Image (cartoon, rainbow, N blue to C red; front, side, top):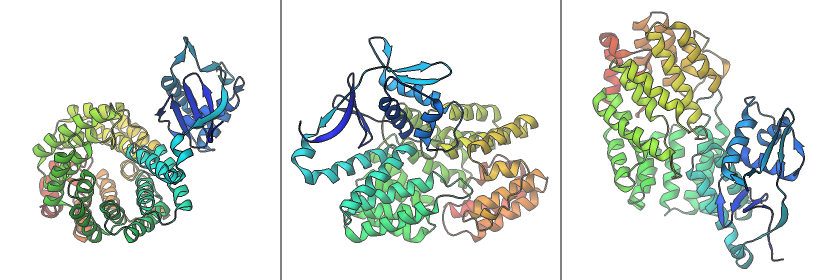
Length: 476
């Protein structure tokens, strides 16, 4: 038997436990971590009944999950595996659990490239990690992070691995940014690896582009912009560098960079979102709606495909702008579309879904459906415990110890304003936001304010004139 990975073979499939991969023939079948861990547990106990509790522990390692999480994960696994001769690979045993019902063969997966060219091994791992990163899926990002850490243990001066790991860490931080305590350790690690990547490969556009992204997340907007401009100068024809430049810049510069993204790679929802943020900040709602409609179309198309960089929140943001011009029913319809979208694993999905529920609550509050509104705010808190705006809308205390030094000062100021508006103190709410905006560093902080659904500045234009003027001037 030639050297290779020990695998479990069943039907046309092979499960490689060492590399956490499932193959159908030569093709890799992507599996999120919970699906892989449940499938592996069932295969290791082939023919036996495995309880839901055992499967849940294997998949989520003791983390709290919904009661039906195992059932939903098994359902998704079955769709990926299909059936053999009309029989399912995974059987349900009522009131007991699940059983893998097909015989397996333990064998080896021959990998000629690895067997014959050992120096390629870390590069294959890099390719796997980069493929996982492009999905923007939380489980895939965690898997990529582990893969890249293994590469660096073997090749500590591999610049590309440092750059990719910096991206993985940045994404890990971003997936928690709506939490009361975000993953600041991941951000610190991203800063370290992005700096190392630039030191090792100073002519790499990827290194400087990643450095820009991580610096921006850390609040170093001036240095982030410089790094992004350097990346674009090194490689002006890579849409990723234009995307990062758009992300870290603001105003007309953000618009120009996002248009460049769409020239180089049409159909990326995130580029439409980035342009819309500037139009919202300027109060140019017609332009924002047009851009967000294109973004909705792009998001829906991306979610229906396997392409990288899937978008989220386009329907949410379009709903907010529709609500700002008084089209509440149309806004609620858009919010339902966002909730129905199949983007639950995307790294921004939790934040998006929580914001969608919060926005539903705000609009129902406008319709004086207070019980329905409070239920929606509560749903937001279920998705993201401590969600700032839902907490404020329900009248709960914002001054928790974890938030006394909250780095997201504009978000906290807007939450405080929501609490004031809830009490009918609209002038004070407007002053709170204006003060925060006047002290914010250059950039897009507070861009959402003109379309914030509870504060609803368009309904009290005179009260909010000062804050909106600051925002509009910053967005030129």
